[in-house]
Length: 187
Image 1 (cartoon, rainbow, N blue to C red):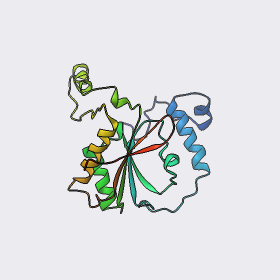
Image 2: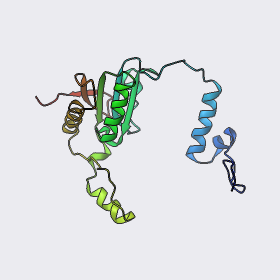
Image 3: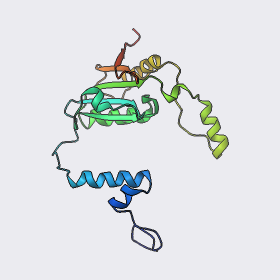
Image 4: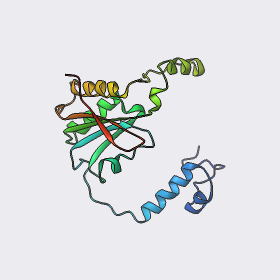
């Protein structure tokens, strides 16, 4: 049994030059990190976000949250998942964000043309048939982004684990023009 990171016949990680000229996407990303790290200067920041805000958003690659919201490194906690829906794991992250790291505000961002609008909970059944095991998680698919933002706001506001639920706001980001549209909670 080898104690090294690679088995004797296993190739070593590619160099930055090798990754730039080919290899996998991950190889290219690792090479980009090598270039980044070469000029990296520790900003000396704390893990506590400067603006004391947590942003929950969809993982969609079209959302550049820092640019869209005018944020800089260290300003916020960013929690992303498929759809930007508030799941048990999002509540877990928000609880840690608030209780251990001092955030007080929560911004929820869904977006137009989300992939979750085109699938259903049947996706779980299809997975079960394919792999022989039903996922323990819900897909959280939805047809109406506005209504799902309202549901997510309600989940945050009613969570017993969160200390700060008075500044929870929800939005839908338009992927065609970059604007946020605020969704008001049901009264």
